[in-house]
Amino acid sequence: MPLSSPPASDHSYLNYNWQGGHESLKEEKSYWIEEIDGQIPMDLQGTLFRNGPGMLDVAGVPLHHPFDGDGMICAITFEQGRAHFQNRFVRTEGYVAEQKAGKILYRGVFGTQKPGGWMANAFDINFKNIANTNVIYWGGKLLALWEADLPYQLNPSTLETIGLDNLSGLLKPKTPFSAHPRILPTVDGPRLVNFSVQPGPLTRVTIYEFDESGECVQQRQESIPGFAFVHDFAVTEHYYIFFQNPVTLNPLPFLVGLKGAGECLKFQPHQPTKIWLIPRDAEQPIQKLTTDACFVFHHANAHEQDGKIIVDSICYDTFPSLEGDQEFREIDFDSVPSGQLWRFNIDTAATTVHRDCITRHSCEFPTLNPAHASQPYRYIFIGATDDSQINAPLQSILKLDLQSNTSEQWSAAPEGFAGEPIFVPKAGATGEDAGWILSLIYNGAEHRSQLVILDGENIRQGPVARLHLTHHVPYGLHGTFTPQVFISVDEKET
Ligand code: CO
Image 1 (cartoon, rainbow, N blue to C red):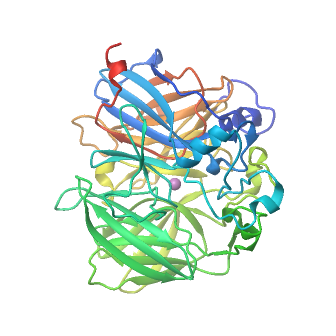
Image 2 (image 1 turned 135 degrees about the vertical axis):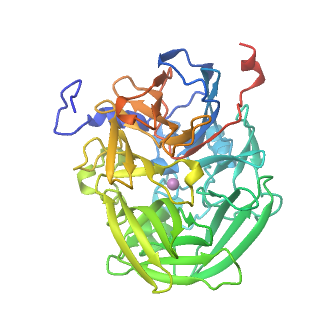
């Protein structure tokens, strides 16, 4: 595609443009978005909540990895063709303490250390709940999620932190609660399904189903052998599906203060990836299948068809970790594995797994029409590199047609870097791709971000609207859309 300015290398981007998206956004803002190219669709009503590390340094001291950054929620509220932006940090216990102290007080899972060298960090396993991975609105509550601890509840209109939420006593203190819940349609209405993974020689997996009021109506607990690093799972009508990546954990460098726990994972290329099928029916036994070694953070979707289970997942050849003291802003994308979309066909009767690569195009953050979650489906929308042949930051949105095996792409290269796309169904439409695709794009040349709205039926034509924020938003992780229009009382009057 034509580039508006010649890049300094054969890359689709300039490294310093990409690096700007890893700067903290310390100010908290609330304003109506004025600078808009195109028109916000009138039927787009509701609130896009996004979460991600907003603080990439503490008092100027950079964190070792962005995943260690304190969670910052952005809310973009759409109402009658207008849009309002608001961002606020989650007032976790650790955030409040560190901001007050003006220095790093906690070790991060991904290698951030307290000042003072290894001796100051040895045997300190007291992690900070950073509430930075996802944000959901369910059962009348807005919850910021981080997989290793309880959620934080927030006020959906003001984004003010209410506090840790144990879900009506369901979760004991320090219980892990995944940042990747799934919404499953059932005959009793939609269920929010989520899980917790408690590591140990036997990994304890607990799955919870919540009805629309937020009440836990079903729960199942199982133990699986060995260490498991599980970030996401998949759900079908009859099964919860977990991929146990072939990684081992050597906690010693972490315990003696040399590395973060996340840096102590070692990929085992000669061991299989284990796939655990846990029936939703508690009377049915769990089942283990295996496939060739791969590493999965995210699943796109799963469904049952003709007695088989089909799971679509982003796979890496190996665990995409950083080596030792490598500075993440200097990452060489050519040297790290890229995520590629694969389809797993699981035959529970024959206990076989057959897998095929759907696309080699480097991609992450899949989304789809929520009406097709856990159902047969045709379209995936996903963040992708500009160039399908290389690994690089995500700069484009890819629409994959799984039926015709074709794809369509819109790219923000060379200056733009793409965040997770979110699919919002068009009002009254029934087509599977009839939706608005929302993605927060960081523009490295302007050091500002913009929310783009693409038409899911034709993403190649480019955004129907670009909403220019007055500032940048650091690269985020996950978010969700709710049709409720949340906005603080003060702003409603302006
Ligand atoms: Co994730």
